[in-house]
Image (tube, rainbow, N blue to C red; front, side):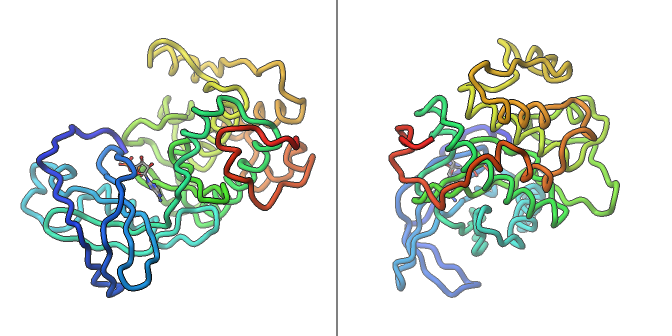
Length: 305
Ligand code: ADP
């Protein structure tokens, strides 16, 4: 979601929450972080001690002036909820429930204690190809599930790829996601500014599932190179490099990793592999991926690989 003006007085977050749909009461725990419109807290079910993440979206902050009198959720959050609530896959943040009061909309989610891959990348800078194969395989499996269900995420980036205690990847934040209604349906605009925006979105030629493949390419590049593929001092400079497809493949990558990146970062969306084809890339087939990674991998490379 795009940044909203911060106004501390508009946030009212109660200590105790009642979920009328599940009949559960939660105690508010620690604060995890804030995004454009949301604040995220740990919440604990007072009867079972089960712990969840709760995304709290202030209605006032989200409302456009004409909506202020209305009680329903603002449009953006309603789309996010309607898409996310129907999803069920091990590589997607589980959506448990959603309810609201006069101040906020509350979204109860699977808790991802190890934060996002953005923090992982900040700490590690570059990860090994062994680890990259592990993470990218899970991202592709999650996105394959989305595409099979005709959903484009449209904002795949490290900050939206969450990690649980076993360092399993969970794709989250469906704030820019969209549903494709029929074969060949294309989208022409995207609100907000996705981090790893595909060239066909920038040029407004019409985009579809291939935009997610481009973003997976940007995620994989950043994990292996320590920086995003398209960089420049200015936003215009970045966009111009994206439109020209101007980036360089790091010299230290194996041929199979470089080939996979190059296939995803093709300017012509039609030439990019479809999500199912990606799982057959030599890079992913080169070795078996482990079932999980130990949490020391957040700060140190594992010996293997
Ligand atoms: P926005 O949609 O407004 O950008 P985000 O979805 O990015 O909000 O969430 C805001 C913050 O909450 C982020 O800093 C993120 O680290 C944290 N967060 C979001 N979802 C979870 C989750 N399932 N588990 C743990 N932390 C989360």
